[in-house]
Image 1 (cartoon, rainbow, N blue to C red):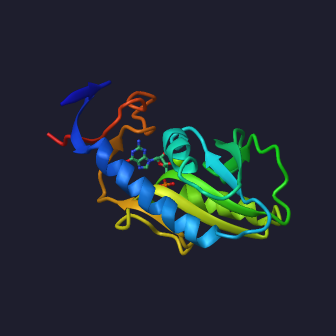
Image 2 (cartoon, rainbow, N blue to C red):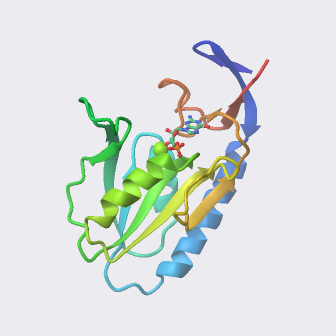
Amino acid sequence: MIKLHDLQFKPMIPASKIEEAVKAVASKINRDYAGCTTPPIILVVLNGSFIFASDLTRELDFACEVSFIKLSSYSGTQSTGGVKSIIGLNSSLEGRDVIVIEDIVDTGVTLSHLDAQLKELSAASVRYCTLFFKPESYKQNIEIDYIAMSIGNEFIVGYGLDYNQLGRSLKDIYVVCNE
Ligand code: 5GP
Ligand code: MG
């Protein structure tokens, strides 16, 4: 058991299982992009996916570019509060094949904001890859092309994922204890 801020967490997925899942998802991506003529752009959504992205990209066997973005909430008085905009994108996606790397897709609200904005940038194709997916809470129609692992509706930390900034550096995945 470990304690982060006010919560207790217990081990859930060991590093060895994560490694297997990352390699399995990488081989699917490798199959799909084998022989691609223009290198795809891997778009890493920070912060949570930094470890996943670094392990995943090193398993890819085709030439690719790697770019990093963040999603930031609009400040101000818009009634659309909570809409997240892309920040930090410094390469053009026009005409490019894009593979978005996410740490975890829960309700999919974040993914839908991202998808709406990427649609404006005239990429040739956009595919989504996530380390974790919560099928019971996903409420969008956007297809997630590559899912490394599906989990239940539980809060996890480790391997890049945080609880209020703590827990990102843990090698294994931990799940919050409810009692
Ligand atoms: P969504 O918009 O899909 O509901 O949520 C996506 C974001 O919520 C993720 O990028 C992540 O920041 C956060 N999130 C959702 N579930 C978890 C979880 O189990 N653990 C952690 N650490 N973050 C989560
Ligand atoms: Mg995320």
